[in-house]
Image 1 (cartoon, helix red, strand yellow):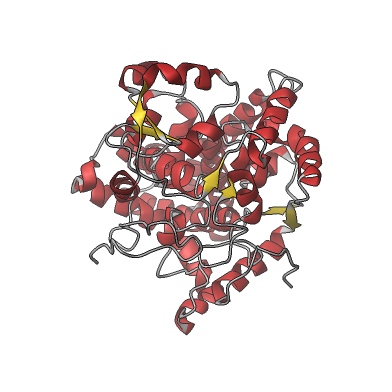
Image 2 (image 1 turned 60 degrees about the vertical axis):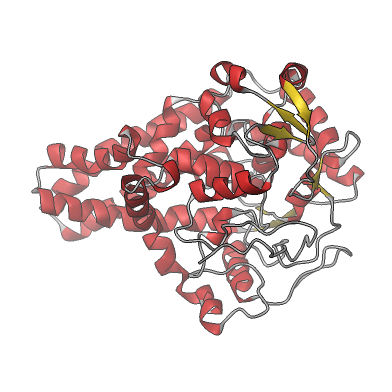
Length: 444
């Protein structure tokens, strides 16, 4: 499908529509290409209305060079504001200033000094000082324990298939759950500076580097807007946007979604291999592309089964792992019928980024503050979105600060349970009428 360069966004009609949103294949690289075409960064890095040349800083970037090399030629304002909490980045930035840009921003978000997000960030920076210094080790322990469990259970489940069908089936599902928990834990790490645990994400068949784009840069920063690639990549199979002309078969996604969920990781794995082999938009095969196959290789060499049977059991493990991973991900908070989506009426054409995040999330109250559930099931999701570089183990300490701040700004964090979130996501796939956030109201 040829890109439509004249189309405008529905909720924010002053903004250009993402030029490659309907172009197939829908990849992270293509999304970045569209950003470079529309952000007015002129092959530099745009922050607010200024252009910077960060070339000399790339190699010394504390988070790793990949974050900057990937985003060159785009507007990184939201990433800059939300990924730096200590204030050091603001002091370094002026030395790399090139010039002001004459082109308007292509996002609706504001970061006013007295606004919701900037004032909340100051309070959180102070609250972080009171968090135990070694608390991140709790996440490291959970992640490493899950990795060890998968490495043990994967070959054991292969061997047990030769002994007992029922026991083997149970062990395989258990291993699937542990694998999905492990790759969700790895999500905690690819949001931060480069580290070895972020590579564990690839065991699920996806690419951590692609997800740094599609998840960390697109979904996190432009949640539920036209720029959220995670919504467009689900289409046409699952349509969460409230299209007025949404067909009945798409609304039926509220019932057939388990099939999509169960096949997602395998589909992403093969698509990743194909676009890499074809060098689509500069993407290429690297050693990271083959990380997903280390698990079946380990199962083959230690499980005692033939190669065809090992592959079959690995794929059998991946199917429920995919279901667990996606259902926890899509009930984390953003796919509720109570949330803002592109097509709805926003609070205003220009909105504080932090308030936008509250409009796009419903927190699962039964996961909030529970570290294990948080890190393995995308819990404490509102705080994770607001401060993505913090470890999941640190988030529960910030709830008092967040609640106090919401009360000051006469806003609130919406909540539900996991089971209510599952139902609410189905309602959103059925929903065709736009919600209005201009005047807060209760949606039943």
